[in-house]
Length: 154
Image (cartoon, rainbow, N blue to C red; front, side, top):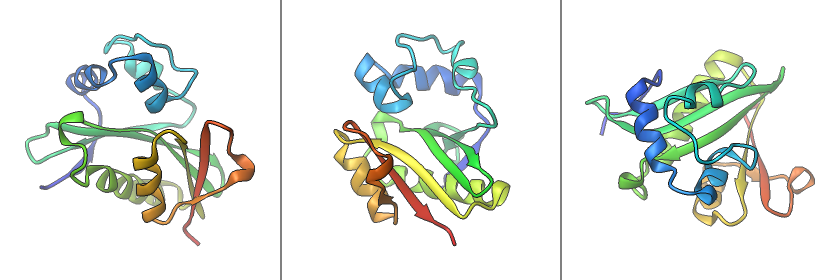
């Protein structure tokens, strides 16, 4: 399957909003400060953060397969966040592909020494994927509910 990152379109936000069906899945995806419910029309503004960049993972037919963001934390670090895969295609390696493409894009744009992300402790599949990709838990910045993970690019 040919996958690529694309600028999110209105139709992507429509699809994405349909994947978040309850408050718990919203917290898993966007964190505890992101309100649920939300409208697809409001998503572009809700997702905006200082210097953040949003990307749709699309297939060869430009169908939305996933979504993710990144933003610089400081001069040497980029943080990945709000990563989600279309529920119809989970378990098929798309999460790994999305993370790899986001890392490539973030590296080209910001040349970070470190890539970081957060994962909820009650999401073991995601934690396993990130560890398999080389991310390491950093307990000093983790919480009871969330694991802060780092990937060294240096």
